[in-house]
Structure formats: structure tokens, C-alpha cells
Image (cartoon, rainbow, N blue to C red; front, side, top):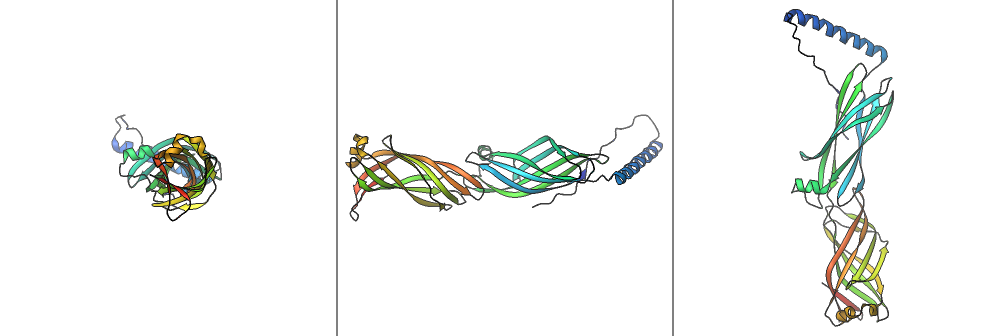
Length: 315
């Protein structure tokens, strides 16, 4: 966590004088006036107890992340030692990655900090992945990129005037990639024209640079454009980064409902299949619900020599 830098007081420059007075005489008079004002200001500050506030970035949270965007919340703790409330004039922010700007902006009229109090100011930021990838082609889906958040708080303080407090904090964000899915086979436990029960072996190829902690999965399977099964599987497992994990999904259906498509599969001609659904996962960066889909596959029923059960080969 980065501590705030020392507050910077913004000085206001006086307009140039064009009254024709002698420079030495004019300079001496102005110096005396400035010294007098500074002396009065210091006496008022000492008497009333005005001081400079402090600020620190206490955390950065990711309340929501998806394949399209990531939301960040920057928490800044501001302490006001003064006997009166102080206004936040505006907040400037910048997110960069390895010196490249990802997003920047200004939040005007950011609120007020109560007298002799502390308050956490939350700054919401939004990063759109398509914007990042279109701007920087070397940022690949599935990667983890470093970032730096820079924030400047502009505050008006009675007697002291406007000050600027610069802050920064480093972190990492992912650019998520949707896992690729593929049905390796369908293994039947029971098969007749009135009823069939089977296990669908679904491969999940996680091309991300981080693990996906599976909480549950919902899915629907079609053969020849006819839905044969839909269910939600409550199963926890770890889908490791850059690896293929196989899930066993139970399905049941009535083969006689498929007409010619089932006969094509039995005769070895093959029939098309589709699977769609979602996986509910935890990541090091937060919870995600990721869509999965596979269309255009082909199934054929075959008999394994070393097994009495029928299997559907998938390609």
C-alpha cells in the first residue's frame, strides 16, 4: 500500500502591474503587503487550528468482472483535522499499465469531509476489455496485466487555500478468456428406444493464466437440433490454468423422440450435436459466471471391444 505524498499547496500568481511605478519601490511595497498577509494568515491558522488533511489509498476492490469488462472501486481514507468541513473540489484519476494509459478522467464536486473526522471516499472505475485490446494489440485474452492507479485529490481549506494530494497504488487485473469446450464422448449406462441414460464427458480447456474454481455448471445438450438434456451440476473442482479438465455430466432422454437422427447415429452416419451453458467460478480477482458453448460437433454410436457399454464417439 502506498502512502500519500506530502500535500502540495497550489499557489496563485498575482497579475502583472502596469501602473508605471518604480520597480524597486513597487517590489518593496508588495513584499511588505505579502509578508503582512502571510503573518496574519499564520496567526489565524495557529489560533483557529487549521491544518492540512491526510489521505491514503486503503484498498482496491473488484465488485464485478466479466468477459467484457471489470469494475474497480478505489477506497481513499481522508482525515480532516480542521474545525470546519472541507470540500473535495474534484478528483483526477488515471489507470496505466507499464506506462500505457488505460483510462483517465475527473470526478467533480466529490463531496465534503466532516470537521475533525475521517471518511472513506469510493472512486468507481470501469475498464472495457475491447477498448484495451483494440488500443494495445499485445495484451492477449487470458493474460494478467499489472496496473497503477494514480489519483489526485483537490481540496479547498479555509485560510490555507487549495491543496492537491497525489496518491497511487499498484495491482493486477486479468483479461479473461472464455474456456473452450468439447465433448470427448458420451458413454451410455442404459440404452433402449424408450429410455437412455448416459454420461457426457465434457472437456474444458482453460487458456487463462489463472485457475478457475468451479462452483456449479448449467448446461443443455442438443442432438440434431432436438434438446435431449438440461440440468445444473453442483460440483466443486479446480480448473487449472493452461490445462484441460474433463467434467462428467449425466444426461437422460428418449431415443425414439429423435426419429431419423437417432437412426443415423446408430448406423454410423453421425448426427450433429450442440452444448451450451454457463460455469460459475471463483477467480483470484472475484466471482464470474462464464458462458460456454460448442456447436457443429458430430456423434456416432459405436461398440468398444473392451467394454460392454455403448459409446458415442464425438468429433
